[in-house]
Length: 107
Image (cartoon, rainbow, N blue to C red; front, top):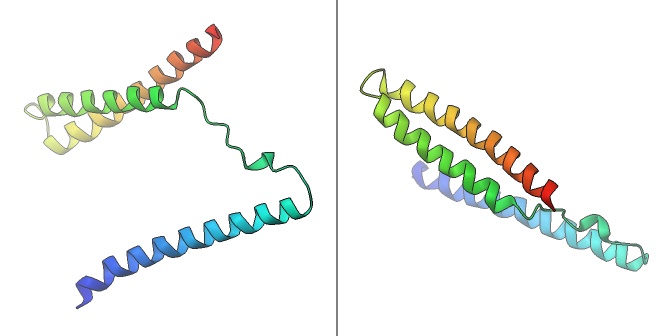
């Protein structure tokens, strides 16, 4: 019986968080409309290179998994996977930073 309570409580918690977020957001926007103020604070400023960043990062993680698998014959398997995923993930983030910075300078 207790096994079913954990997933139910998890999904109820997620639902409650999203419900409070969306109702509060709509109330704030309605209040701004009532006062005739600018709602530009709600506009998000996403980078148009977000997919490029995620792509480079995920490719680097995949290279880390492959390298960890190759290295697992030499050292402990858990240590090989953990260190290589973190190492190549960090390299991927640095590479994405420099690539996106170069593309933004070019514009």
